Length: 273
Image 1 (cartoon, rainbow, N blue to C red):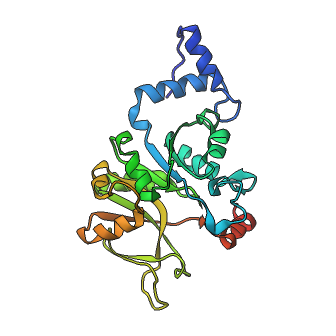
Image 2 (cartoon, one colour; image 1 turned 90 degrees about the vertical axis):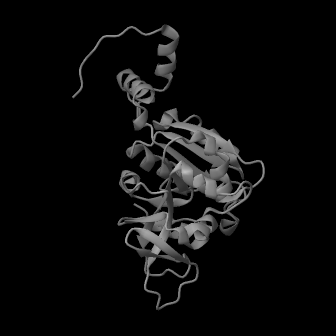
Image 3 (cartoon, rainbow, N blue to C red; image 1 turned 30 degrees about the horizontal axis):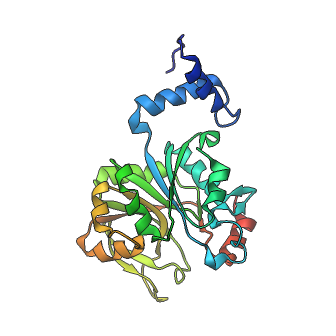
């Protein structure tokens, strides 16, 4: 329930608030002030997200010679914008984007995120550090459980579901999983209960599991101690610690489409809603 109030605000502060009004995501001053109050006095609302967008997109060349993979268009909008839209729906409004190759194109488009109803900061990779390295590099920013997303996937999942599951299970790390028929190009996981017990990179046709890593993770800060400093791949880190049974899996039903090859990107252009 909302109540109408009258307040007095410093003129300079009001000017800053008015600059966030874009007529779309933040349609008026009242909504802008409400968002400002939520950000500062309801910290639990500001669940944090890290988007991994630093890759060079070699499998998508020549398309990625002049544009980074997360900025390729699907339905007239960058893939990254679709991801940010899903984050905003789930109230993950404090977003870090890890950028590297052609990262300036991402910064130019999204800026501080205010036009999209979120707060965006950037972590720049001067040299490639891999997906694990990008997470490790930003470890000091995360005091609570946070969500990590690959910057080249389209999905329509409710991200709150995996976050709430992770918190309920008190998991160290939780991986979003999807069921796929053709798994040979993805690799699969095997589970016992909610725990992931095995990763299989090149599954055989008779492989029982069809659960695929969707490139979305919820991570407890304590898990970061397992990620080495320097360059690393988060998938390799998961494989090394899987025997400890500290990784949970959360199975999503819904649309999911990675855009990390020419073939899959063409499929996204033709079929994504």
